[in-house]
Length: 90
Length: 296
Image (spheres, rainbow over the protein chains, first blue to last red):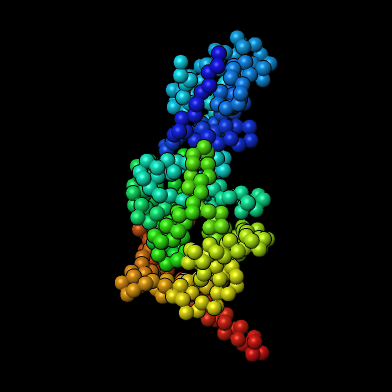
C-alpha cells in the first residue's frame, strides 16, 4: 500500500498548535481537525519518504493496522467528499 | 476514532484563511492584489509577539470594483466604504461570516499622489508569501518596511505603532536604513516619511502637509476637514470633500454598536457640526489658558 493523498489547490491549510484547520476556497467553511484527525491529515499529506501512511499511523498510535484501517479510510473518504483532499489515483 | 470538530476558530487562523480566500477570488477574476502588513509581513519586520486583528490587502485601483463585486458574490459584506474610512479615504472594511475582517485598500496613505503609479511601483518588485498554502503577492521587504512605518506615522499614541518604528527603523542597520530610504524615494513617500524622521515641518508647502500633521499629532474634526479640502486636487475634488463633510457616516454609527434608526441619523447629522465646533472651542480655550499660564 503506497497511497498518498493530495491537498487540492483550492484548499487552505493552517496548522496551529496541534490542530490542523482546512477550508475550501473561497467560501469555506473552516474544518478543525484535532487529535487523531490531525495526525491522519499530517500522515497522508506528508511529502516525506515514508509511503505507507497506514503503517506509520499504526505505529504512532501503537495499534494494529487492522484495528485502525476501516475508521481511517472512512474519515479520508469524508474529507475527500468535502473536497478537502484529493484521493490517490489508482 | 476520528472527528471533525466544530468549535471557535482562532482569529489568527481566520486571518490567514481570509488572505487565502481573497487571493483565490483575485486569481479567479484576474485582479492584481498585494497582501500587506499582519501575517503577510516578512518575519524580519515583525517584532516578537506582534499580532493582528484583521487581514489587509492593497488592490490595483482599476481592479477594485471587480474585486468588490466578486467578494460580495462570495459572501463578504461591506461595512465601511472608502470615502468614510479615514481622512485619506483609502480603505473599505469587509466582513465574512467564516473569514472575519478584511481591510481592502485602494491606495496607501503616504505613497505618492497617484495611486495607480504607486501600485505599479510596488508591483514591479513584488515577491511571494505562502499564506495558508496559497501563494500571495507581497511587496519587496524594504517596501513592506515603508508601508509599516507610514502606517505608524498616522497612528499616534499606539503602542504597536511605536514598537513597529523601534523595530523596523530604530534598530535597523545602516544598510537596512539605506534600503528603506531608497524605497521611500522610489514610492514618493517623502512627506509622510518625514513624520518618522521628525522633519515634517520642512514640508509646510505641500498640499498634504496639514493632513499629515493632524494624522501624526492629532487635531479637531474641523482641522481635519480643512486639511482634507486643502489636500484635494482641483476645485471639483475640493467641493466633493466639502459636500461629504455634511453627510452622516451611518456605517460608522452601526459599528459603534448603537442602533441606527432614523432618529440616530438625525441626531448624528446635527451633532457632527456641533461636535466639531465644540472641539474647536476646547482647543481655542485651552490655547488661551495655556497662553495665560505662559504669560503668568
